[in-house]
Image 1 (cartoon, rainbow, N blue to C red):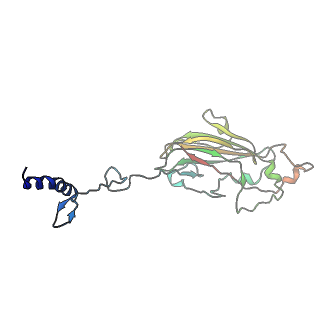
Image 2 (cartoon, helix red, strand yellow):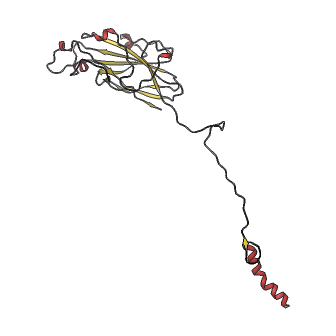
Image 3 (cartoon, helix red, strand yellow):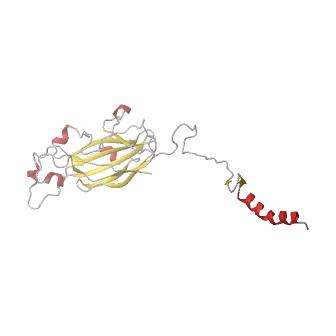
Length: 234
């Protein structure tokens, strides 16, 4: 082997090491080879790709206290005392044995999901002045509530005959202060059905009275019960 061949052989591993680390740019300088980069983004959009594709549902119930429950009569009243159910003029002149009646219809609004409706026991109506300081009249009154499921075209009469109808369900029956019911009726989405309620308030012939309280002392008193319909979406 010649001296020239020996020199080439000795330098060969060093040159390979330099080439493995980078391109040679003059004496002792190297540079790393560049690489292409890219990013990809997506978002939660709608089918058309021009708006948000994630959101929450809507659950809202509306009421109507004016029979025959036209579309224009439905509204929302979410705080005590709410809308006034009309029991009629005779409701202010009860005598023992009398009953009076008032209706209300409830449904979900358009674009609402379905839900379940309950009925809480009565509480005093906010902001309504009454003459029953010791609540003797309040404690003497009885309540029954009947419900009929129908649609926007259903004819619903709220009177004594309502409680004998084959299609109705009596969901509350007892003292005014305690009568209520849970999971009374299911409301379909998008105003798909309507729940028609008939409230009956009775002053019994022999009402429950405080000990030693004479029946005649109920004369000239007034009460203003308010009811809440709590509802839960499905």
